[in-house]
Image 1 (cartoon, rainbow, N blue to C red):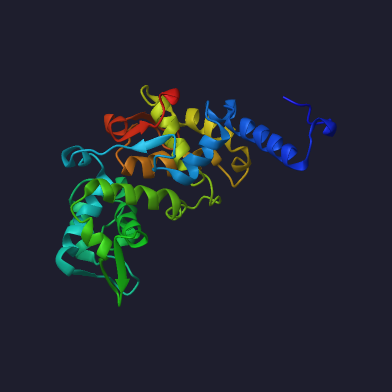
Image 2 (cartoon, rainbow, N blue to C red):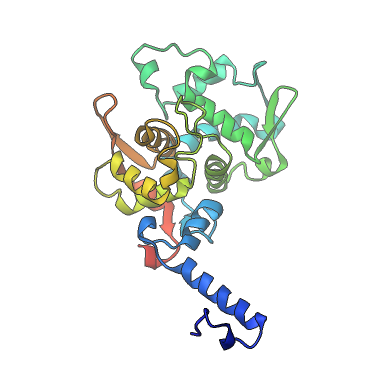
Length: 286
């Protein structure tokens, strides 16, 4: 390779440009310790392309019976079924689900609230149960539904995919990772912790989740990859653990949480559902 510091080695500016591009590409494709063996190009693909096949991780197509292990999908499925055949869901003046729907959805038992279960919180309106709110919000943000005149209904695409649970789950994950505000249900200062490249957190959980591990183990690796986020607000480790693991990955059925003392880090382990649903696109990463 020519010495790029010696311009006499290049016949013209085009040759110099090609040499620069070659070196930039080689740098971008080098694996990086801070990224757990992924290259900058692969990290970029995780953030922008997951769950497409351009990403280091991809979603597998599963039978409906296996997809029942995804609580969030099952709750979304419940609302979608109510909208089949051009039916609509009447929302409240604030755009939330009405009390009956809130109670019916929660009663399915897929995602329970500790506060509601122990009697410290009454279940009446949608905001009483964040696990119900996120179901409605993700549907609204998706391409599957539209909201008009205070009513929620399926779009043409929603009607087309109404019985395709794999397509619905892919849409939900895409919306959750790219459109949804991860700080919506908490009081943490940062808008970005957890929400920046959540697919990388998924990569970490798939790689290390066979054993029970402290969530600080994952936070160490997340903030090593994104050190600028560590100073983005107070309690970064707890913010990351609550959003990524206690909420959204748990809602998707990707992990189990071991009981712990209040404010202690969570002890988590990936579920068999995670490995069934998510594969590496390259054997190099496995």
